[in-house]
Image 1 (cartoon, rainbow, N blue to C red):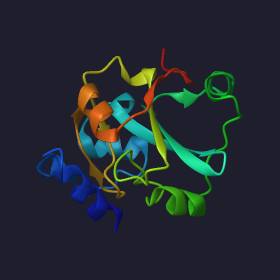
Image 2: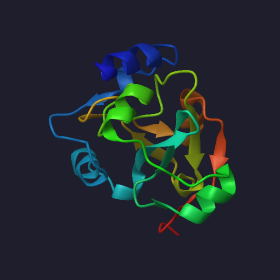
Image 3: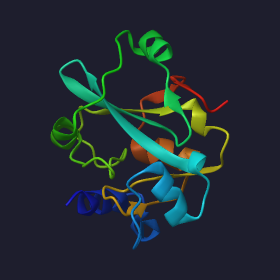
Image 4: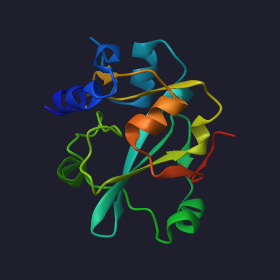
Length: 156
């Protein structure tokens, strides 16, 4: 199960105890916000895209949407989200639990500027009923993010 891989991964950062495993689903931004008692914008969505022959994950604020033009300007190709089957095979996580942790080495992680207006965010932890609250610095370090990007709209 992906959450077990995430727990093993988070041990190196002493964050296993901070994982929230909830009775309610966190599979969507709306459900996660309700389960965590926070606003939707503070849910860190991990969106997975094709990146040549591989995949990439971009973590964005819950109220942000990917802007195709900004994405293409940043990465020099059009955004194409992974299919549910490819999401599992490329990231090891199922939709609803995709997170920037415990990913294969070849999957790059990017963090979107839409999250910078908050002190902490809530990304998933590999299952559809898990989350963890992290500061932006922790999220950057723990996700081993390649860099911050500006590829979203709708949150300004």
